[in-house]
Image (tube, rainbow, N blue to C red):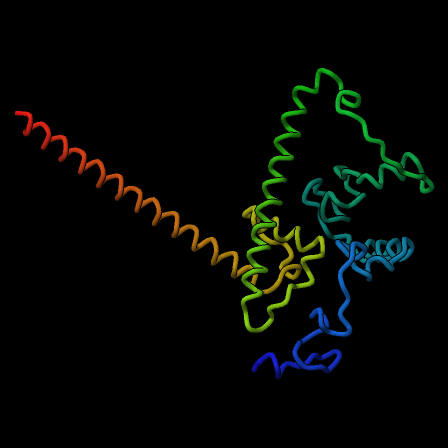
Amino acid sequence: SSASTSVCKYCEEVCHFSKSYFKCKLYKQASADDVGISDKKRKQSNDIKRDKKKRKTATTDNKDTCKRCHEKGHKSARSPSCKYHISSKQEVFNKNLGQKYRPFTRKLPMDKCVADQYVNTLKPIIISACRDVRNIVFRAQIFVNYYITLRSQQELDNDIPHCIFRQQFWYSVCQLVNAKRVTTSTNIPLNMMAVWNLSNNMVEHFESRLLSSLYHRLQSIFMVSDVYKKCIFFSEK
């Protein structure tokens, strides 16, 4: 009955709430072009970004003290004014190659781009880093599949959230499964944090109960075996 009374606020039709539902005539299917980037950021040109950066620098209070170099005029080492500032890849390219350059990528095997004396040291580090990233992404996929399955069983808001097609969503989920603080909770649905906490609570209690049950069963088995051995010993006498 609740589904029949729901009215979309965009197309004003019955049986859904918003245009994120796939049956809405205003529904827009996600594509690879809008993954990890928004239209608002895409429309900003380099001149607009440069003007914003200048205005932000101009409004900086000169009384601000850097936490790294303890000098006034900037707040942290992220400012180019700091002597401990580490230039980004884009800044290094612009400084050495100028504004008009054309980047390209060439794939090389490891023995061609790394010196022989560093291969044995670098290769285990790369394998370990790739293994950790693979485990985090695998756990994130399992949790998102579980969340979508659980959400589909609800009476309301049971559609697949459109945010799962965005890169920022997976950044937040990877932070969640890696036991890190989610820096931007707006990238994930509101009840996802509650589902994650509930799942952890269930797993922790299940683990403790499973260990207690195994301990009890093993203890019973060994006690029975001791009694059985005593019975055999007396029967032989």
